[in-house]
Length: 317
Ligand SMILES: [Ca+2]
Ligand SMILES: [Ca+2]
Ligand SMILES: [Ca+2]
Image 1 (cartoon, rainbow, N blue to C red):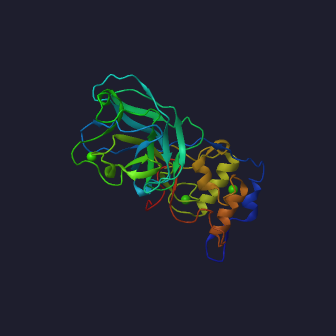
Image 2 (image 1 turned 180 degrees about the horizontal axis):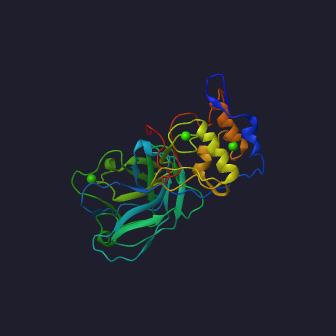
Image 3 (image 1 turned 120 degrees about the vertical axis):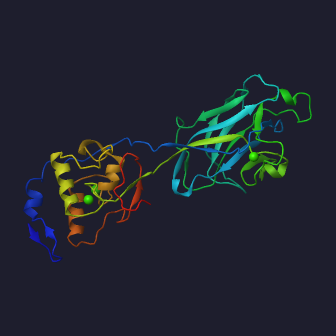
């Protein structure tokens, strides 16, 4: 080995390339492990007051926000308490469950819709959005979920109202919190509290963070710093299948060149071209020995798509 102009050890080109040149094997990307599911509740009180007060085409929903550092997120399931005052009503088919990427004054157009939800009287009805085409991905809060009504309901003062299953507010007193409960009526959006709804809609959302594991880009050997050993680890891993080190207790996320995880690709794809090959190892080494082309994702900690990679960062973002 040689010393470079900065006094750091460097590998001679023969050392770098001699034992590693061929075969060039391009890594593929395996399915990512998912971040854990999180739940956002809207109601904060125990009352349950059905609101037989909607007509066909109207919507009732909630505007919610996940903690700011959780975004981007994917909405997985929407839960809505559906209930009649008397109970035991027949199931009800409504128009759809919508997800909007915004909040009041206008949530925008739906980014995801569950068509034709069937509701059962007396419980939280949960609708699974994951099997639908596309992804209910939210980049930042707040966001809104609603139910669009197909059935025009009897007026609240009618004799039929207590027998009509519908959405439910959490209290009849003063429990409607501004900015959280929305209705779409007469072609426009408004705060449900301003429309006489006396509670918060009993609705909830289950979501998943899309990025949750802190990592340092380029830290191939998972020791929390970027140095020569990362380049050596990369080349050994890539050409000879030498397993990359990982912290005790973590699920190895950077083990197999033939099945690199999405996180492995994020961390080890130095030049950000979407494949892992010799240019990434040499890019790392070139940067280390004084080059200017840093990792495509920079030199600071990032959040990755996997919770299974224990942080290699000193300060997690
Ligand atoms: Ca409330
Ligand atoms: Ca390292
Ligand atoms: Ca690359």
